[in-house]
Amino acid sequence: MAEIATIARPYAEALFKAAGPDAAGAAAWLDELAALAANEQLRQFADSPKTEPDQVLSLMTGLLKSSLPAIGQNFLRTVIENGRIEALPEIAAQFRALKNAQLGAYDAVVHSAFEVDGATLAELSGVLEKRFGRKLNLQVKLQPDLIGGIRVVVGDEVLDTSVKARLEQMKIALTA
Image: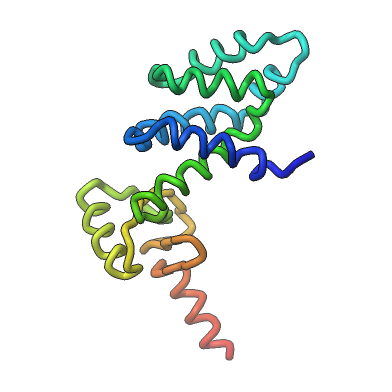
């Protein structure tokens, strides 16, 4: 079987071209579809020979928090009819990469021990964009084992200012 990335690429590119200026809106509902597609029970239901594509389509659209636009329904119908539900998370990732390349932005994951409010996140965004020298799309993930501070991952670059990292550095310095 072909690699998932190879399967996902034409879907992501076609959706990106079709979405045009509404790429941000498409990215939102595509991420929601990708999260649904990660569910093992849903994939088993979709893969069942007794299940019709319309049943899968109605189930998935029913589980979404918001309604799908026409382009989203057509896209999802195509993915389901071609048996590519398992590729939806990769399609979403490749779509985001295309959108970010167009905007000149990068995805960044901020790992924090505590919740980050909107004002703090906006301030942090400015500091990190200056530090990394590019526009960033921040996503916050809670990671209580950091104790305090943050750990930022942008592509293959990592900025770790967490208490946990500092303690590890002190441990290495003391045992050396």
